[in-house]
Image (cartoon, rainbow, N blue to C red):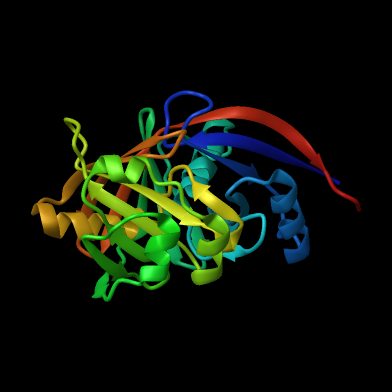
Length: 265
């Protein structure tokens, strides 16, 4: 059996930057074990599996190790493939039904805007073992439903982190977001995201983490329209807007590979 597959660099306007995701478009649902093996074979932070359901799509995401509940960059990549390859007309939103509910992607010229749920944070006592594994001091620590969110003193601290990933992976079940106020013009905040327990030491640009970062920084900065930069080696820019209980996450995307995946019958 042959399946079309693409690799798309998301949250960037040029190849070999942003966050690469694989998009495997099947005409019918694949077995879960097949999706796990494909994701492990692609060995990217996420592989997306959109399946048509009427005029919408059922969408699932897998890391090389596990299925995840929400993934921004692979959703953006999926929308990009659907429009650029002619599966959807440019004016029609892409509607996805997922483990995190109904999500949409809308095309605005070269930009794609995702409609995602906002996720609240609550302040907690810092965990020194996690901070030691990250190699930083915290201004404050928070928890989302899944992740730690750690605010540090400045963007330079975020950029120079060199975590002990083996130790960090043994301490957390999901991921850690490290963030600071932006220091460059036009950038409100920066962040990095680490999830070694999920087989992703560092995710280059993480849409889902901004579901928590946007309400966090909107409250701190007293503004709802924000611009962010994820300070990974590849880097990526996100335009963001807090709209009630939802977060609009906009970015660009570039296809870097088109191919066919050969699976046993």
